[in-house]
Image (cartoon, rainbow, N blue to C red):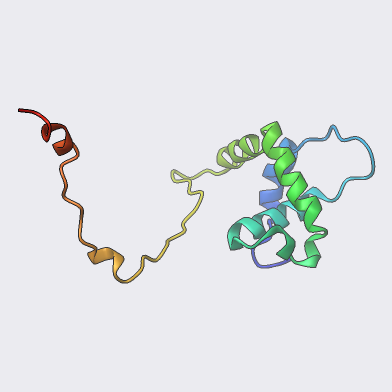
Length: 121
């Protein structure tokens, strides 16, 4: 198990909302695929850079898109929110650094309506 892979408790909340109506050849393990999707979303890396321990990157990308179209992600988020007993729920805690000069950039102070008055007599 990698550092940020799903715990057994998290998996217990998620597994019941995943689709089970599958056809065709045997399906890749949902937990492993979810771990790969979460890894990809957390790192921002391309799908092709998903570590081999998660299986083929095409499987992970296809499953992500298929579940998005079927609304699985909405159900998954709702299930995780209901399983959590706290008062605060946080999806992402990302912070992005701004370029060192961006904080002191000169603000544009032009009047957005000034162009209307130029032709008025």
